Length: 156
Image (cartoon, rainbow, N blue to C red; front, side, top):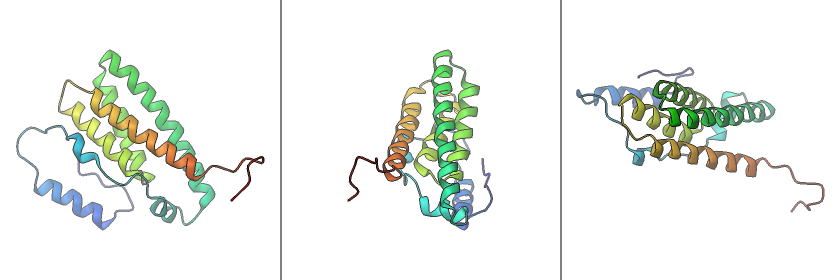
């Protein structure tokens, strides 16, 4: 849709401009799942956005993971009832939140699902599963990278 959140990165601006310049004049088509590839999470970028505040990063990621998990659960229910407008709204919210926390793979998967819904493609299961998969990968990465050692476990 051409929206760029602040702070605007010149790479993001260039990408949006390229998309608009190269946009096909026909009706919007769903984004192929093969285009979802991207980095999982850029912690350095998020930490920079937060002025190096590690505690704030942990708090924000905890909120993001919790909120996204709830949104995915709601989406699964809306898939059963074919409530496409709600699916699009949830996907859009996840896309924006993921962009804010530099979770590119989740953002791209949410964008693909949102495009699929807006293109009125009848099959939503594959892009929803792709979004769920990328979210689970992010959760696994986050919990592994930020796990506190248990008192009974020796620290290497």
